[in-house]
Image (cartoon, rainbow, N blue to C red; front, side, top):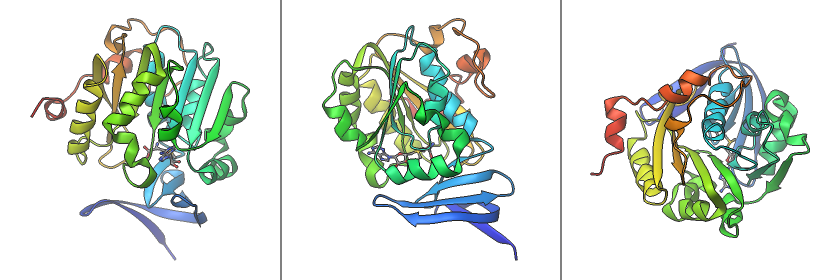
Length: 276
Ligand code: SAM
């Protein structure tokens, strides 16, 4: 019998994949977690019916959320990830030797445990000495921090459930306080085709908090519409003036040219950044 999984990305559009095997499904205190093995994308982590990461295309998202800011900051040492329980973003951060401390603040312990079991390729960095894993709400963690991190990456689920607060002006203001003077924030900000209103309001909130705000794009087949946005807020350094990127990293999507071209935006995306 053929089994197919559909994520309803909007009320009228979905992505459908043929399933080899349902590996696990469970209800955690925060969300419904499923891991399925698919013919096209390999193993897939699904939270509340939304694809978070797949073996085949996770590298795009994890490289883009990480290397753009870490190659813009002149000397990133302390890096915080909010969300990101699959471990992929931490794995990329650890490729930067000058990072001495990478902190993961994930609200749901069961996501980390399931990914350690079924996605070792993503989560292998979580055991490293430079990494600290805290199971708490990112909103709470950031409230009590000042001048603590060089780079903060918001690797969150979609703005539903516990992640709603991770898209608010107050949260970005707390992040500003938690960043050191040359600090940089990057947040995943969804699809320009399907989430234009969200991108518009997040861009406005970050640009009213940080002196420099820029939006950049990456192409991720299993995310809604395949085109994904990231919003960067910086206290001082401009990614477009980063010049030659500092080091050769072991990457499959991100490179010197992508570091710049990801910021070259189509007109309809640029329009999202204009004042109404
Ligand atoms: N790459 C993914 C995407 O954009 O689809 C994000 C993946 S990662 C698994 C997202 C994580 O954010 C989830 O494990 C979820 O538990 C966590 N999360 C949601 N709200 C949170 C909060 N308030 N504090 C910390 N972690 C949170």
